[in-house]
Length: 419
Image (tube, rainbow, N blue to C red; front, side):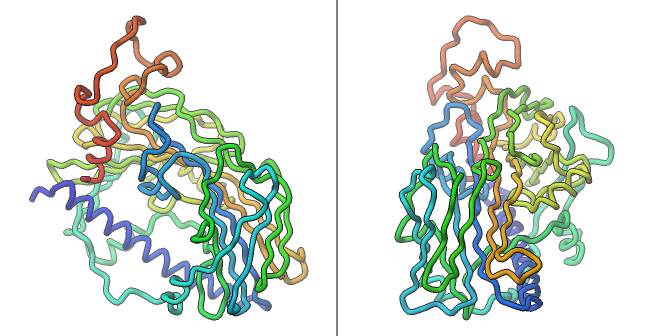
């Protein structure tokens, strides 16, 4: 039975939500087990620092929805910052907390940390399991490896009609990684975050985290720490050249990011004729990357490089095997550069900490499966990104309505998500 793009998109979304729910259940149980084993409850402060950049040359910076589609914090390319704090003290009647920032951050003297009243009221005791699990119906094929042609033993086929629930769970378990547990609303504890309803300003392009930071409030201990240049915002992912198409081997290269500890890429497309989701990853071993397109711990990145799942920081090019997306509409590569974490505890070991700080970092981008000269608004990039023999004479740019099907950003996303 053929499936529409919208129905397949809905199935993919359900699978992703099921996977996320399973991860959340495991992670919540793990973090509370860890906290119960601690002698003293600890105030935790997390800074999630990301750089997001569209892979479309010439795409307007304000195109909405791009970052949100791929796990980012907003719609535009740029720098992102999420601040979250948990305190073992009960929330006072008038909670007040703020993060005094260095001048180079260019966002004023301080960022207010606000307790989200609605979320705090609606959240019950964490760790509740869903009442009912329904196995979604779908078919997926998974490829892997940076190679010109499909390697033997591929693809790996997932057909939920032919799987038991146990097999389904094992398939979507993915590569084991350390669950990250950011501060979140919790009964009996205080929680606050930024951005919030009081202050949601954008992070400027020239913003830097380097310098002294001071987090304080009427339910927090004084948290003083410094961020060095090695833990600032990461440089954006810059794709320098592309060559090929969904029917051919597709080559792509990127600039090395100085503070990156590793890279990972994955691509997804939808074959409307068969109703099949097609997934590829840059891993040298089978790995779809369900849980890898986000912040990872330093140890996980090192281990995944050893396991040939994550590309080491010395690698700056990859190739998608020929033909795997030839029947897919609007194939898209998602790309992530991992950055190392900054972890601080006070007082330092061997004493029991009063507070801890984690600064975690990543830089992400996305890229359509098409050569750079065929991308929207590619004018002016032919010389820098040329990967095919072309006439040096200026070529007229087609009007929007004359571009081939699947070339414009809007059509690309329609193809992937059935919009």
